[in-house]
Image (cartoon, rainbow, N blue to C red; front, side, top):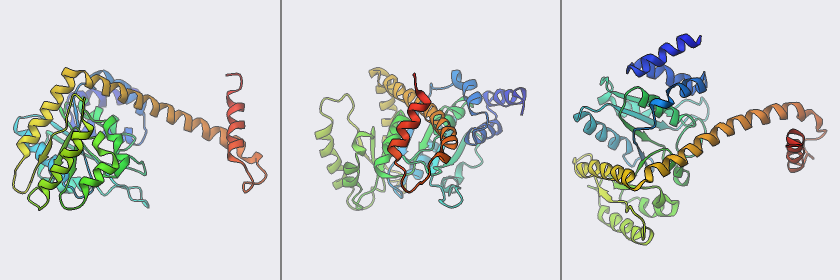
Length: 314
């Protein structure tokens, strides 16, 4: 494809063309002209807040995403949703369950739902997640929602991609204690105890509040703990309000800029990581036949020798 043809798709994206958004996301995921596409839209992006929804599988993350979407659409705001699903270890494809669960918005032209497969990447997010969010922002989607796979301790990675992180838990399943053990206390800007119509909700809320008493001393933001039930439509208005309150806090305290500095570091590192991997593959391809016995090879010595050969004099 010529650069002129690609530029036409980019113009269509900025004109809020849904098909252009879908095309460009697919190309970026497939690493087709990724750098050219992203550099072309960077000046149009990184202004909107990203709300991250995370927590263990079955906690009701998708239900809350759907509730948030309904709320924002009632205010005539366009919503972009990135839902990260586990990939099949055999085919590499994603289950794409969020598209099934969010059929109510399937015909709404102002809601864009994109399911991404993790493709073996740990941390609950994919390597292209930030790029996809930026494409949606460039396409005019002012509310950006990121739902991630619940994978325990590796979920900390979402903190670097979202401005407001909502951790969703369920009562009666030990999730409260598990959240504390997994380090999610450091991730959450807002705790949601979903399915609060079930027994044990208040006890879990009290447990989390007690842990916050120990961990939030001296901090400028104390995560609220909200009881919600999508079934009973309770607590949702409080959640919507607390998301707005937290985003105002980020702006007034300067923490939004601090988070985005860390996000930039992450993005630069990923570019280095890709370039370093490509360099290693080329060096290894040229060197691998030098070893007589792979069974007796010393990977530490080989790594040091290849490094010195490649970067000698540097």
